[in-house]
Amino acid sequence: MNIRRIALGLIVSAICLYFVLRGVDWGEVLNHLSQVNLPLFLLSMLLMLVAYFLMAWRWQLLLVPLELPTSPPDPARSSAPTTYPPTQVAPEGLLSLYSKMLTGYFFTAFFPARAGDLVRAYLLGRKTGLPKTTILATIVIEKAFDGIALLVLFLLS
Image 1 (spheres, helix red, strand yellow):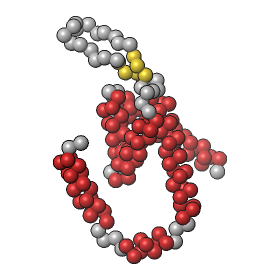
Image 2: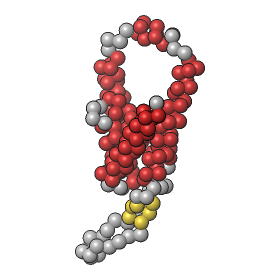
Image 3: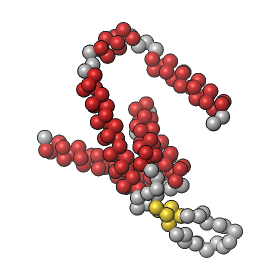
Image 4: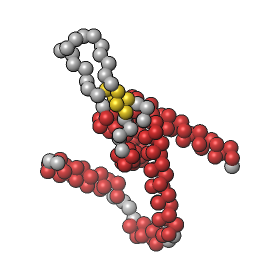
């Protein structure tokens, strides 16, 4: 990785941290942190990581039926459409999807209008070559599953 790129990233991060953390009363932060039930907090963090892992697995299952062409069309050969044997997207690893999902949630926390979902579709599209709209459609289906699950939990309660 280019050293200038790393330096630029660090500078941008420092500027963003300055704007986020200015005006924070650190005494009050430490007071609230001292009142946290640490075992319960750690358990909740572990359960959230497991929940995100399960959501990444669900996203992987939604991506499995999607297919990529093994080679791009060669316009010099002919103008007739050619079909290529498809390859499954499934080799995209679960940990890779997990990292893309967490990156998307990070951006959703800081930008409006669920921008993290667009980032997630962009990242996976760039890596796999799938159309970003197709990946975004799987994310919409995933959100629909979330809504149905919440509705079921609401009806059960």
